[in-house]
Length: 275
Image (tube, rainbow, N blue to C red; front, side):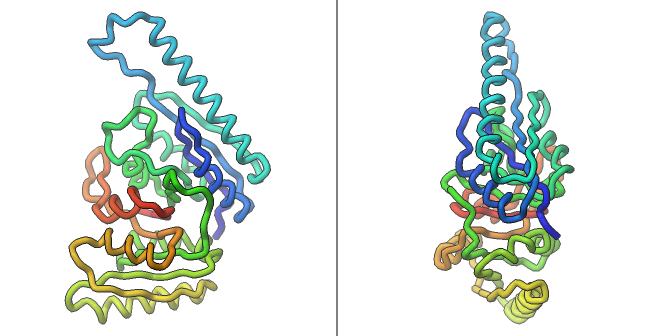
């Protein structure tokens, strides 16, 4: 298993420097092809805007087109000496931006994205990260804005004995093999310690069979799992957290569970997630 094709989701109207640096590092590491993608919604016509001059909407359209050109140029400039091949995809659409990116992700092994919106009321240039993760069908590497490079010295698996965690660890295996140190961390509730220890041992042994030497860390759970995991990550100098993404709702727009949202979408670490 390898990440031979990467897709990087870029935000229009802003520099994507850190995100593109991480994507470049990944492309170098896995000798991968890279697809750049960007999307946004057009300016929405409302009743109050019905009397605004047509020139205003033409200017807005021209601004979007300019932003698309600038973002594509930024992508090609950053990736040209790192990717095996480059491809660019973009779209201005009135529908869900997450739907568009998810559909295009059929061409990739891994999506790399910034940490965007987690609700549907944010700006029309911001792909809803939660909705994207839940419908993508591919693993996602999320890069906070403060991150400037891919760090593989310390990687943490936030383990929970669930389908999502098992999927995430399998999907992250190529990355885990490149890590200098891997820690498998689990929080256990009352009377869960023996079962959790067995679960951790199984994961560590499975990783060993794939050439990944990992240590296990266990801690008693409290009502603030995300805060507790974040503290463990900071104490161990973790640069990437691998975790399953958990959803509460099967409505039109997915809602991410509390730990996923608080630890991964608002975190200071890169996060590798699968659902």
